[in-house]
Length: 538
Image (cartoon, rainbow, N blue to C red; front, side, top):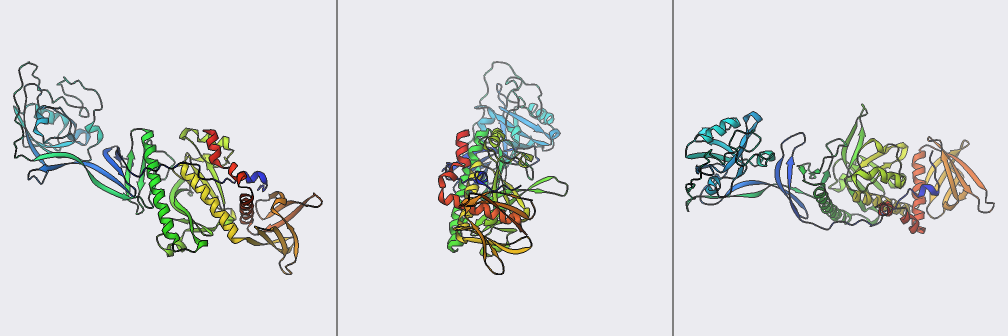
């Protein structure tokens, strides 16, 4: 039953600017990059500027000399009596990964060449191709190669992190064979005598010099970009990870950070920059619009869909509040013509916005729902923490989730602001209805209140102010009973009406009353804001 009274108004929350936006526009950090469903993760550096997210990968470049093929290098290492080759390796064909240098020991033979780096994949050992060799075979070749070992290497930019970083703690003095996924102790040659090491040859002055540097591999524009912390199409949260997709659908890949705090900081920084660019786009769009057709807010959200097999699916939608309408797009509008090609367009006076989930922390959203007395009918069906619905006429409803609580606050504030402005601009809405077989017209007027008149004679049958409405009930189909208090008699009068689209009428009544309350009693509306309750909860 649809209860339309002052208690219902307490659910109509007006969010003001009580949240703090992080103003950082530049940021640099290191993350792991992986693709959905892949076990391999690669080290990358992430750079954020005001309008670009750049993904960098490490590579070897020639900083002096004439070598134009820095990614293929042939290096001869002179074995030391103490210290051996001075490097360790991981990987092998038995694990479907190349053999990679995982450690280089400072001031020992490999390090003194200046031409070998952690992450170099072995191509040849003494002229023998080892690209498809096992770990044990490569270890055997290198241990039994005499005083000098000639290696041909190629830097593997996307070497899985586990090939470069120690997964265990092998003894620094162990020279036995070890797991192909652990460091092989090739920094020793098995000679435990205390004789002084031979002096390895230093790089000649005319020899090419190399450095490992971070190089740009992907740059994604932030304008109209979107962020996802969830696995595609599901409500499964990626731990400490998120993906950013540019407006053209190009993905950053899954960026995983080492701590939840670091991941949260990156999310806030990215969200802030994307929001700032969205505001710039709104300003540009509004320059070509009339005052009554301006964009209030727009951005991405995930809509929950229900398939024929009742499985939950999520699909990105671009939402916009513009003029008198709420728009749903599959892709952002970039021209004037795009606005009429929206998937759905709803009149703002006839929609009802409802927050379903809010949380201060991932683990506390359920407690927050209980504290805030939010509706808990179907929002518990998923695990997404920030959700809202937009209910429209004919019982249609769209359920959306977004990534951050601050975004939820912006959407709530924007929806209410857009609805209030449209109510004030429209002034009144009239709907056809009937009562006991008589064709009537029912008008909701921002200044006057409710008026019912004969559709033929236009004679007024009754009129009440918004403040005189004391309650309502409906059958969920076409009929509604409105309870008004007569100012003179103080008695309650019931008016029963029947509408073809009852839901749209009830939403419109709600919008007009809420806008009226906001105009005459903003303190009351502010006191009902979720932002204030969040502050108390926190």
